[in-house]
Length: 301
Ligand SMILES: *[C@@H]1O[C@H](CO)[C@@H](O)[C@H](O)[C@H]1NC(C)=O
Ligand SMILES: *[C@@H]1O[C@H](CO)[C@@H](O)[C@H](O)[C@H]1NC(C)=O
Image (cartoon, rainbow, N blue to C red; front, side):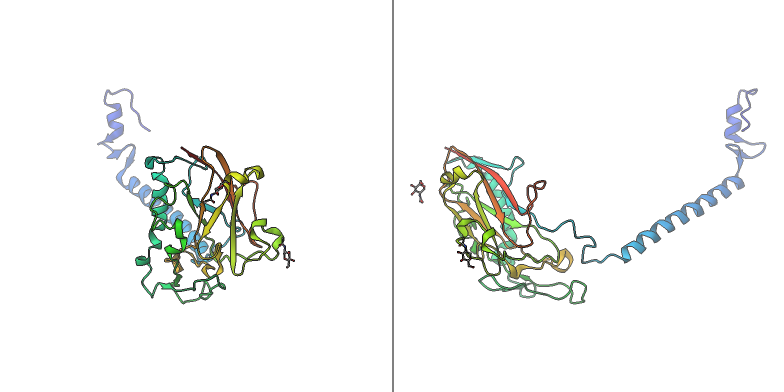
């Protein structure tokens, strides 16, 4: 480029050469051609990009995850939860457990009766565990599916309806436990009673994925003592499955289980483990929440 070093206005001439009518060494026509070239060039790139994405999206279903082999089996999660998977509070000090009960109230908000009145969105699915409720194929055109009602009152002492402290005030804290949603997943109850814990009493539950909690260390069982379970049955009733996903099942209510430690020792740190049992429910050493979780509970006086 003609960076003329002789004249003191060399760089100015480079910027705008009035003799040749050149801006930065090129004429207007030349700049225009370059501009057009890049518009077309990037236009084509964008076209190829959008085309590829569109072609890929066409092969995906709106409703069904394409690759689902890595998500099943489901995780088990609890509310309240804390980073250190520890629930600890001081008996008689509301401030020390307010965050816990607040999280439970928030979780139960959509489970209020007045939120489930609309018959076009909710179905009654019985007061006892029952069979899977099929609501058509994921890809069929039946559109948005109804959801089963889940009565908050089923959670009894863990419903927060009568005792707004969810048992925390009396030193009988509750947990609300849910099985994570997986689109199109049908959890299967255990087939044999041998995989179930002794407290199940050798009975195989009907139409239910049972959940049981126990102390992680066997010798602590006499410190955990009684555990009460609330919900529809002692676990996750099959009529709430399968779940059709956010688009087709926007009002879906996950079945919940309230678990209450009614006579837990105070001033003792206790490790509690809760597990769900089912034929297609697995546990993993790597994932602490797959089909189970454990939690430290400490009530101080
Ligand atoms: C398991 O079920 C069988 C009958 O199916 C019964 O004989 C056995 O006692 C049960 N096991 C336990 C631990 O109760
Ligand atoms: C709580 O556990 C203690 C010690 O095992 C027992 O003596 C007491 O009766 C239990 N209380 C209730 C209400 O079950």
